[in-house]
Amino acid sequence: MRVVSGIQPTGDLHLGNLLGAILRWVKMQDETECLFFLADMHALTIEGEPAQLRRNVREMAAALIASGIDPEKSTVFAHSHVPEHAELQWILSCTARMGWLNRMTQFKAKSGKNKEAASVGLFTYPVLQAADVLLYNATHVPVGDDQKQHIELARDIAMKFNNDFNVELFTAPEPYIGGGTAARVMSLRDGTEKMSKSAESDMTRINLTDDDDTIATKIKKARTDPEPLPGNAEGLEGRAEARNLVGIMAALTDRDIDEVLGDFEGQGFGAFKPALADALIARLSPLRSRLLELREDTAQLDSILDSGAQKARELAAPTLAEAKKAVGLSR
Image 1 (cartoon, rainbow, N blue to C red):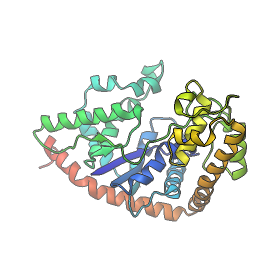
Image 2: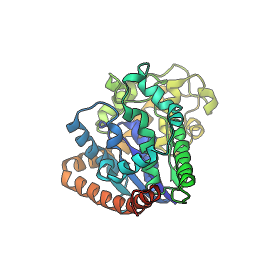
Image 3: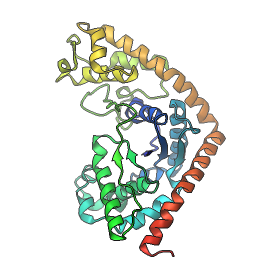
Image 4: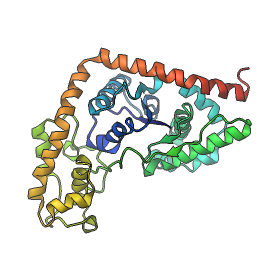
């Protein structure tokens, strides 16, 4: 069993990144073989500053390691440092079909109303995602609901390639359900919007580099409602902000929402918020300290990424060689 997953190096990581993906990865590495990459090539689909992208790769690597990803257990590397990804993408682009990509809902969402102005990369990046997975013959990929369609595309490409060229080269990957449930963390000011670094107000999110006082202040000022907390999750129906804060507590303490509510049933947020702030500080304070240390040690980060890329290339080479042979690019 082999799990492959990537995360875009966006910089300014926040609680949503941690609870939504990174802590799940930390658990996965004790369950199976894992490759985690910083998807800097995928990041090119969004306009950005080149120097900032380079900084973000190191920042994301530091965040992963500070959060508990162990380079001795997992292979951690930058996407662009393994050129086999891009080479396999081109081969698979000649297998994938326009109709398949036209159905991808994420392109419709990200391109907006003016699809003609969107980059070709934004349209075809699901094929690169497929290459990311198929290159290592990953058996499983951890995904959220918004990415299940991409796993289906990778499966379609794998099976069509195998069938077209009469080979048994690519493994059709399955969604991975290990590592616990990823939390969907919403804005502290609007429980219907995902927590995001792009939100104008910093009060909408908990940054991984926020100090303890800032964390406490943000939780104190987080939007809630005047109703007491119910005894079960059903009672949070229609209370987006309340559900978000309770969900954060559940994810932090590795419990389900009903268990958390059992501790606070009938109480208001005047009692709940200080407890949530304490739980956040207990989790984020040591992580922040380690992150700041790693941020200053660029040589160590580069060494980890270089070592990971070398290991990834060794794993990728046989698959790419067989793909090239199958399509007639080599003997």
